Length: 374
Image (cartoon, rainbow, N blue to C red; front, side):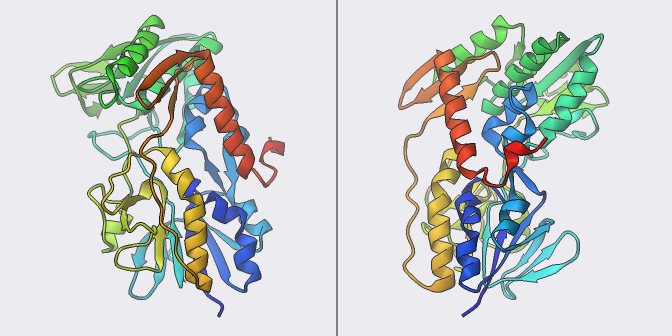
C-alpha cells in the first residue's frame, strides 16, 4: 500500500535516510522532504567555518539535490504546526501537507534568554549558517580598527567561538578585543582539567574570560550584566546553549522537560507511533541525553529502519544511547581539547583527530556534488 512519508529537517539523524530515499520511492511511497534551506550545515565544523579554516562547501550537505536525485519531492519551508489527529503539517508559507508517517530532525536553536538580543550585530550560533554572515561582518569590522567582540556563553560553543574569532582576526591581520562572558564558570559541567586547559588557551591569546556574572540584556552596543556592569561591543555572539523549538509543545504533542518531542526507545512519539524524531529536537523517555552530535549520528540507522518498518511492516529496533563518547573542542589555534572516559588532553594531535573525524563524516554523506560548488 502506497503511503505518504514526510521527512522534516535535513539534520544529522536523517542523513542515512536521505541517502537511501530511493528505496522508499521504489516501493511506491510518496516521499516529501521539508527543510528551511536547500542546505544543511554540520554543526561540528561551524566554529572552523567562522574562522575560515573551512569554506561553506566543506561543511554542508545539499539536501535539496540529495532529495530530488533520489526521486522524492523537496519543499523549502518550515513546519509551524502539527495536527496529529488529522496527520497534517502546516507550513510557514500557509501550505498544508498530509502524512501517514513523519519523522522530525529539526535540530535546536539558541533560546531567547537575554532581553534585546536582536539586531545586525547580534549572531546566535545556531543555525550554523549564521556564522557565514558573522564572518563577513567581522572581516569588515577588523579592517582598519580594533573591534570589540563579545561572546556570551561559557560552555563548549562559547569556548570554540571565542577561539575561532581569535583565529579569524589573526589570519586577517586585524585587531580584536575578545571577551568571553562565561556565566558562573567556564566549562562548568566538565572536569577541572578541561576548564584549566580551556582557560589557559584563551588567556594565552589575550581573550578575556569573565566569570561570576551573567548577561542580562543588550542595550544598543552594550551587554548589561546582572551585577550592574556593562561591556561594549561591535559584534556579539550568543552561545548560551540550545533547546528545541516550541513546535511540539505548541502543537499539543507530549514533550520532555526541555520541550523536545517525547519519544520512546524506538524514537516514536509516545502518543502517536506514526511520528518519529531524532537529534536535538527530541527528548528520549527515561533518559536525558546531552545535546551532542554523537547521539544524532547513532540514531541514523535506527530512524531509517524504523520509519521503513512503519511504511512497509516489520519489527522496530530500539535506540540504545551509549554512556561514553568522545568530545573534541576546536580551540582555533591549530589545537583542540580531547575528553573521553575521564581522559583529557590537548594539542595538535587532538585537532588533527577532530579534523579527520569531521571530514570523514562529511565525505560519507556529501553525495550531491557539494565539493564541486563555488
